[in-house]
Length: 193
Image 1 (cartoon, helix red, strand yellow):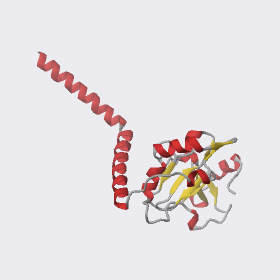
Image 2 (cartoon, helix red, strand yellow; image 1 turned 30 degrees about the vertical axis):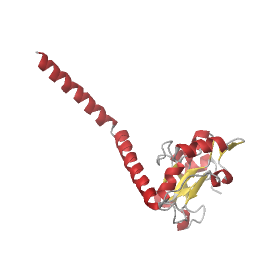
Image 3 (cartoon, helix red, strand yellow; image 1 turned 90 degrees about the horizontal axis):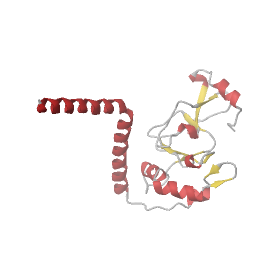
Image 4 (tube, helix red, strand yellow; image 1 turned 135 degrees about the vertical axis):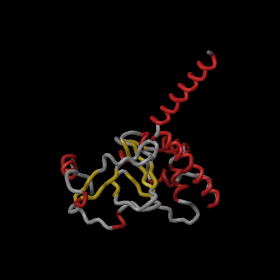
């Protein structure tokens, strides 16, 4: 088990990058389903024998299945390439083994409003919110053909790129709006004179 005391984890954070494994937990996935790497847990390599298959791989999906907060239990992230990250408990790795569904299409299903509402309705709690395997296995959705899946993925990828660009360029966008307002004011004042 990777379950270690906080002081031990903090101690591991002091090791050189070549001496540690990096573990992802639920706080590494944002509510908008992107990866945030500012709080990666570091585990000393001598702690446990890790094999290449243990690392998150291309086309895998990481989903948060347990969390103190109900709104966080469905968060997911999709990996476009192999990584040097491991998963921490409370997380599932999902890999498509069927040739009838594209991995990225499945990711978009898992971050959909329909899946979120389903999870909110069927998640369980005692001291922590969780998704059971039964709940996950019984989620139903329509599966279009591969060509249609790819079209949907392309459309959603483009939309997400645009949203990310806008999010990352707030200052630029704000400056552009201010410049536009100044130009408009200048031309209006010039025309009125």
